[in-house]
Image 1 (cartoon, rainbow, N blue to C red):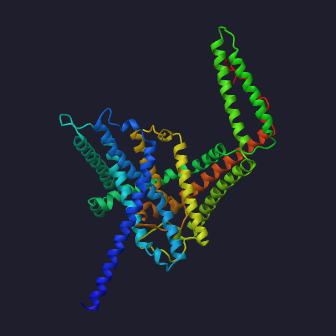
Image 2 (image 1 turned 90 degrees about the horizontal axis):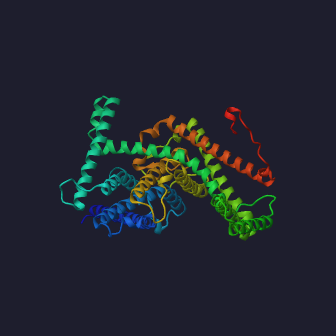
Image 3 (image 1 turned 120 degrees about the horizontal axis):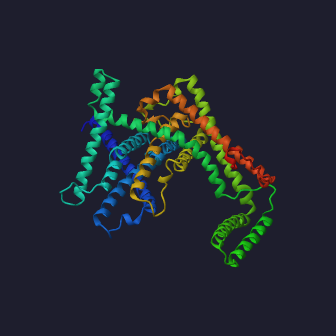
Length: 488
C-alpha cells in the first residue's frame, strides 16, 4: 500500500474512532440524565395511575407516557447544562491545552451536543409531548378492537390532523406576508422551514416567559430565604418573647379545657381553637430561633441575603453594560457560528474567574425563573406535589420546563451574561438579528429586575425598622365614610 493511501486510511480511522467516542460520551451523558429524571418524576408521580388494579391497559399507557415525559425532562436538563458545560470545557482546554486525558473534550463534541439538544427539543415539543397527552386521553376508534394499538392509531390520526392544521395556518400566514416565489418555494421544505420557524416562535415565547418570570422569581427568592433561614432581629429579647408566648398558650389551652356550656359555646370554642393554633405556631417558630446557634442567627441569613443581592446586582450591571455595547458595537448582537473554536480564547475578560461567575449566574437565573414560574398566579396549579401529581400535570410541567430550559442559552446570550456564541441551530432564529427586539429585551430585564430588587429590599428594611421600634403595635386610626353610614 502506498504511503499516501496509508495516510488517508489513518485519517479515516481517526475520524471513525473520534465519531464513536463522541457517540459513546453523548449516550453516557444522556443515560445519566435520563436515570436522574426518572427518579425525579417517580418522586412526584401519582402511584394509582400506574397500578394494574383497575385496568392493566391504562397502566401500560401511563407507563409509556411516563417514559416520554422522562425523556423530555432529560432533554430539558441537558439544555440547562449545555451552556455551562461549554464554558467550563473552553476554560479547561485553555488551562491544559496539551493534556492527553482531555483531548476528547473538543469542539466537535460540543457542537454535536448543541445539535442533539436542538433536535431532541424539537422532537419533544412538536411530537413526543403532544403524543403523550393524546395517548393518555385516547380510547380507540368506535367499533375497533380495544388495546394499546387502537389507542396508538387514534393518537396518530389526531396528531396528523393537528399537524395539517398547523401547517395550513403557517401556509396561509406565510402566503399573506410574503407572496414572492422564494417564500412559496420555502413552504415545501418541512425540515428547513417549518420546524425551525416553529421552534423559533416557541423559543421567542420561552425567552419572553423568562423575562417575566426571572425578576418575579428573584423577588420571591428573597422571601423564601427569609422563611427558611433564621432572621436576626434588632432590639429583641427572645427569651422574654418565648416565655410570654408559652404563658399565653397555656392560658388559652386552660380556657378550652374548662369551657362552660352555653348557647355560644361552639362559636367561642372555634375561635379559641384558632387562637390556640396561631399561638402554638408562633411558639414553635420562636423555639426554632432560640435553638439556633449565634452563628446561624447572626451570619446565615445576612450572608444568604448578601449573596442574593450580589448575584442580582452583578446581573443587572452586566445587562446595563451590554446595553451600552449594543449601542456602540454591532458585534455585541447574539449571533450563531458554525465552527466551535474552543480552547483558543477565554469568553470572559476576567479569565477563569469570570467564566465561573458566568456559570453561577446562568444557574442562578434559571433557578429564579423556575421559582418565578411556579410562584406566578397563572402557573401555580402546575406545581407538582410529592406522590400525588397526575400524569397530565407531569406532562404540563415537562413541557413548561423544556420551553424555559431550551430558551436559556438564547436568554443568556441575548442579555450578555456570557460571550459564548450560540452554536448549531440555536443561532438561526430570525429575531436574534433584530436590534430593537434585543435592545428592548435588555432594557426590560434591567428595569424589571431593578424595580423588584429595590421594592423588595426597601419594604424589608422598612418592615424591620417598624418592628424593631415597636411601631407595629400602635393602634391604627379607624376612618368612617358617610355613605350609607358604614365604616370604611
